[in-house]
Image (cartoon, rainbow over all chains, first blue to last red; front, side, top):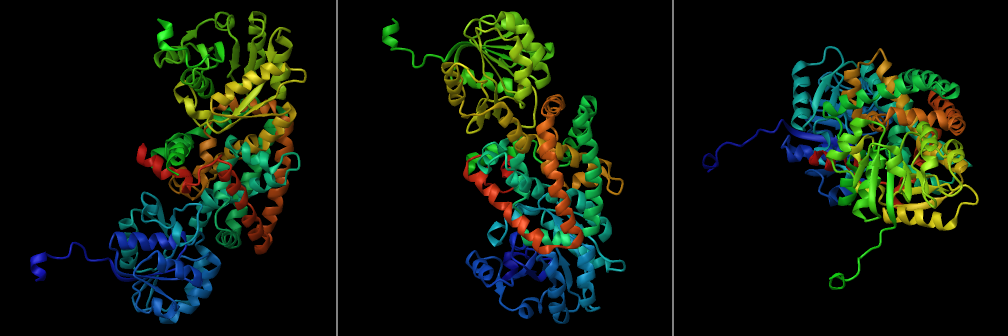
Length: 317
Length: 317
């Protein structure tokens, strides 16, 4: 009878994908893998029993494993979607169980330290290709995931030298079919790029929110009321997952301190302009930074709607 | 025949409102004044002939004056919607022309310096009530204005001691009918509140965008591509009007430097936590800042939609 139905429209890229860690990113990967038919079977695993219960309730993927061994034994692609600090221990646990030819990847926001922590535990018969989809929201947990999270975002792969090209191509296809663009770079370059585009911005955002909370002259109620003046923008990224961000700063220390040093130098110069009343210097700087946003919008990485389109969002919620 | 139509539904709050400066805020005030029938007549004025041409094209208010004297001669409410540095000169020009009983207000983001610059030019027969609607977008110019900009935002009034209560009540009603909440405070308190909720956040945003642009190790193309990691949020407020922001920093120097000093102290402590690898300290701080955002959302000053609801906005544009 099969011939009367015609051939299957698509041969899934993988037979079995296992996603370890069912937070925002892991849940989104499962959602898009099912939606785009990227695997015949998508298995989820999480160390937290409450998360596993919730994942089953919201029918995340095909099966939720209680046992890490069962979860990865048949996997052709294992995606580690856990905090950077947990990568080493989980790598050690799954290394001996992995199937020959399996691809092991991750979504950690730091790459050099993940490679250092995971690579020693990998058997020679698997392909370790660390990765990082630069996408997310300020929400955490399995309910926060959604299939379109990666559309038009960039996913960075940092394969160690000598990695099998066919495996890289297959993982690239996975991300492409998930809607993302893929860029390959070294782990160390990734870590400095992310220090400026993500890690230091988060550190600064956490810091200004703390400064505001601790200021005696201004009440917390006032900070909240008048936050539309700019402050509220910072609170979004300062409400991201604390465990994840703790691990990022512990594991990308060198690049973060390097970029933070530059930021501090620049801020001292700017502070001096304010102190001495250098209006021309301030104007020139403020005029210059507009161009960067226009570039980001032109590259499709940002909305051109005023205020991030908040009004449209408010109308919906 | 009038009796067959019934009485007018509303007596406008003012006969004539004159808005000087047709940027984002001035244009929005004109739009809401017409929409809510807050005046029988709304007159616009702007020093830039090109802006006046554009304002006529988009039919901003009832009349656009080429002449400041004609614009304010009959005004019952004059709103100065110009950069903070221009308040003094414009105040000097219009002071002698103002009608007895007129209310003079403004929308400047700094209040003590505006009072110092404008008050000496005001005749005794007018009411000077400086104000600041804490609302805006990153766009500038007459086309950027829209009537709902002030809905559910806070408008701060900083009347000098001895200001006529009836005039304050009337201006309060103006903002209330425009959709805003009103809070009265001293000019000096306003200036420190805005330093933390708006001015220093903008300074930091401008600074990180500059640091990113100048980093040799990372290309501008990379900064743009991977900006979804957090950086792009900062570029929004760093694309605000340069003249406006130059004047804010020149005129709120003391409060900005005070708050910036706190920010720097806090950032040094945080930098040290990263350097020494104080994971518990980082976690505690990152967990603490989440509560502030929840408060801002609960107070209706922010959307709860993930990513500011950017996806909804992208779908629209």
